[in-house]
Image: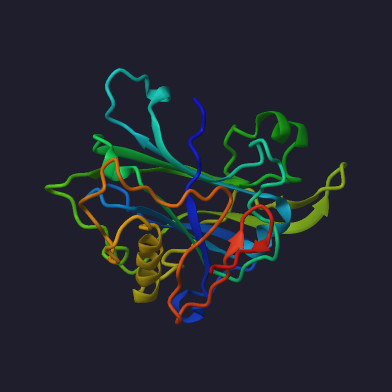
Length: 290
């Protein structure tokens, strides 16, 4: 199955140090901000998919892999492994343009938000979804490099944080998406421990990794009003075909309105209170918003 066009709308680099706990300077951690596991939401436009990354600068030299797929689970006539992917985002060294890896350009401060969205939630008849995610390091000295080249798809928790989140949507019984309604703490998904930096036989910089991997810190990222407002602002920026300037939005969408199609890019309007850096992914080039 062809991979759908990615729809990654924003990278926001937060400098709200007071909102996070002290972090281990050898550990890279991935958290989930939205959607929450085992939740029921109204199908709004756009529908956010939001992660937080801690200590990303540690992983920046090693060609970071990051992607997510949103899979409809209740489509009749499909085998479990062939369920339709209705939305997708991220960067993968296996994709055709090998240089378009996630960690290009200057490394971000910690923590930062990965704000993604999909316009498909209001156009699908499905009600049950699985969000698959993956965050890892392509360059790695802790495993055989040939294995990584030939079969990186095989999961290895030492250099790879991956898993699934399950949720439903319902116009009648779902909760209106609210980034801060799930509690003040983002959900820790996993961590990668980077012990040392070296080079492999081909000269690539690669890390020696902690095995078994470290446990992620609980409540490492605080979901406060600034975070919720930043996500809402990002969603509004995707509603370019709408006169309405508030989010979430429920009506007047089906078949008529689509978000900005940005391949390898990031774009949004930011509140003045948020310190942010917007980059053109894969190139490390600042994106000027006019």
